Length: 285
Image (tube, rainbow, N blue to C red):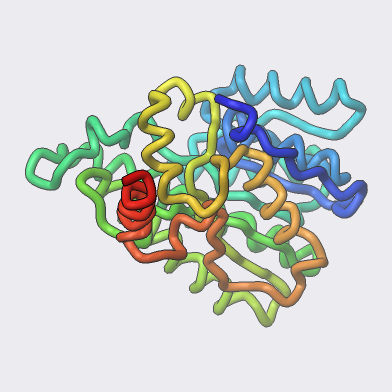
């Protein structure tokens, strides 16, 4: 990536989440890892929850070596007993629960190559997307909310996707599961708002995680960037900063919202990039 792709990253607000306890699922890598570090630097004790137990342990070690609080928890978010145990282990480690970032998702299993057009879509791909991306969020909420209520309330932040807001040539299973996350977010916010639970969803655009960088060529990135209103793609810290804000008391009046963190890609007409190219060509001519 060129320097234009590397803007100054958001910085945590020191101690804004002091005495808070957070769970971040899917936090052995990518957005989850970045968010776990960010929340810890803002003062939260963080449960690093992931199917990849070794990866979770590594991230927890990184955080503890920085003098901050973290514990690793192996979890299969699609499985009810495992999700319930994730909450119990967090309570055992830290005594309370204030923040849940439902971030785990089936990514490689629902990549465009396998989550193709509907006629060739294997139902096992569809079922896996729903089990992890949607059922996993539901189970996280189901077992986190009672623990949060005992502590007087809490904040749930679900990772959705810009893909949930429109059709594409592939990715129906992934996008549909994320659209379900949007609806679930608003139901949780509505059902438990009067009891002190806030629930919002973050809809990322192109975020340059290691997995994305290894899967996408530079021309592919440039093609997507043509549709951005910023000069650079997102970094995990861009999502982490929004999650930290929504988790904090600074966002006490925000709930039930679907918040795009996407460089503006969802803000304009589909002809935006084509129009820019046509204008540039006319100027060159």
